Length: 279
Image (cartoon, rainbow, N blue to C red; front, side, top):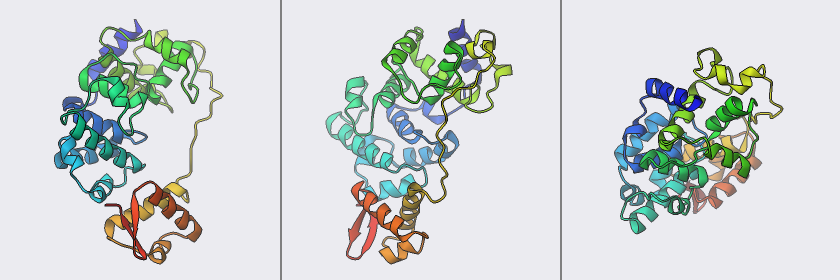
């Protein structure tokens, strides 16, 4: 049976990750950090945050500028602000305890269906339907014979994947996520050592290539990199003028656009004729 083979593999091969032996707050912090960011980059930052802000109340009492600065180069810094805002709600309205209920989790800033399901599963052992990119790819190959799933989830996909959840759903979520990350990878999957290769529909079909194209973006010269360059400069110096910031980037108009979006996102603020991280 595929489920039992994957669960057995997980028991024998799971990585020793600190958020697998922490409290619900530690799980929540990890889920925010791991969105679109690989484990090796998250590990040192997660340890720093948990030492500095071991519970929601400690993060909620921090200065916004310290939170943005501490996020460092993890990328997508709006995640830091959403986590900060969620910490305030948890500290004020939930007795400093991360909620267990899916509906309440979904109501927190920055938490959608996936993150709510993941927190409920990994923090509280709930049998929720967790579908990240690794899990969706694994299911698509093993059960459907398709290399890459569609870019968006359908209600039908959620229905048939929910039917796969065994009794220990929380362990199933962790196991399938780990399996997709380490064995059934996007590129160069380790099919020869896969414990379910003999019942894999994709293998049986001859590994047909998917028509779905993976979205890749050249990091150099993007608006995201420009924003990241500005934020890093403001982490290193408390205030910088627009002219000083434009010297960091070859396209002055792109800097002006980045400053507007960073202001709108609440990540920076204007002070006189200069900019600084938002307080």
